[in-house]
Image (tube, rainbow over all chains, first blue to last red; front, side, top):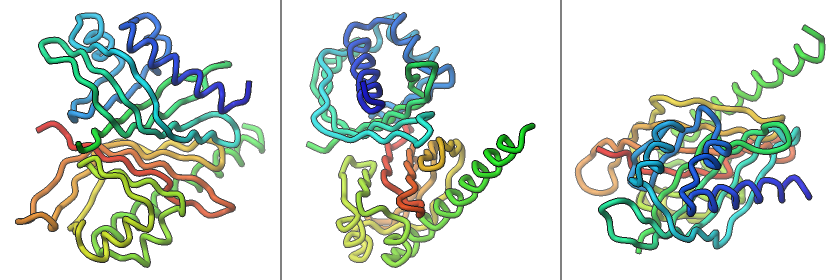
Length: 126
Length: 136
């Protein structure tokens, strides 16, 4: 597996964990100092995001990346995934809807894998 | 500390200094709507995502700056940090305040911003900017 493929694998693991509301898996994926920016402008730490998933306030259906690119540093200590993503949101007390977002994921090397250090998304206009 | 360790730290600090200067130039370029400054800061592969969700290439952004479709006053980062990875990748993540003149009376936008910097053949450039309007 190439280094780019390993980042993309982590990204897919992240989407699968979001879709499954798998708190244990998300806890493994997130760096302890995670900075998570939602399209609404709300922000989360690792602890607050996991609690929101656990309580059902955050939920997702399918997440699909339409296109993007991935950059990895020359020493393979960090990586950035940029892309346009379709995401089905299932937040508590909100209608289920699909949104298209611009997303940037910043990854830090952790052993043989990657940890998500920051995520920021902006909703595309209709 | 080993000599190689000292060199690694120096290199990282040098990169932090370069990126800090580029970030300053980015904000100057935005405030002055200066295609000259911004064309030096931007990678040819730039993706520039406005808080409204509009994504632009380098060319599209420079045209927008010159026409003042996007017309900014002072821009400043009010938190966050720059992180360097290796010798060719860095990110700047944190909140900014940006004065907008382009859409009616001047007002201050409070944004979350991620900047991605890359060393392209020896020259550092901005390859991605994503902004998200902060929750009021």
